[in-house]
Length: 242
Figure 1 (cartoon, rainbow, N blue to C red):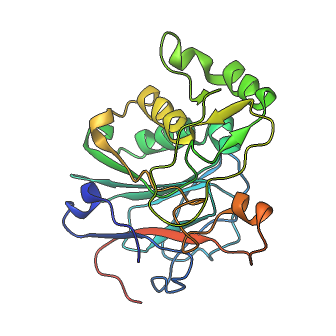
Figure 2 (cartoon, rainbow, N blue to C red):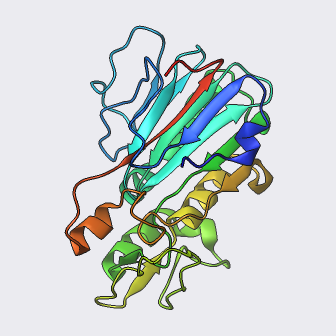
């Protein structure tokens, strides 16, 4: 069953879904980039071919459905209460560190989109309970964006949080116990720095690793014998043709 964000559901004339891995139905004409874990942002119209243009964020002012593909990274969908505009951002740690959030919101500004009227939804992704990283990675991110959380909670901890999921899936096994990374909190700091108020953002809090096999997880696949799975997250203005 797909996950839907309340703040996007409240926007009239807009459709969206964070689909589970088992749901292979996507809207007709769906555009998605060739994702590279980078910081390239694409504005798309009705003619571009899907899966060819390199990028990790896409927005449109047309009624064409747009989306991204994830398997632990953050799927970020954005709509507006006033502008003819929707966007989708692929938010892994590499893209976040490279500047995908900053570049996206700068592109929105240049396109004349009012940031004050945006509603942002962060869908199912790997959560702190299952996302162990090495201290070298935490140090790298600290060097790039550490100024954003001076005097506040860093987006990682040496103390592991317990999962809030109720499925029979176990949390990811611990290996070196150096840092447990909060990808969502990292993104929230970047959104805040780009001019988005926390009240404009809704987070799913669903862990793709331990919430069940209906969610595709790259990390879970490295720990268990599973076939490759992933999920589409998409958004569009107007009605959707399956």
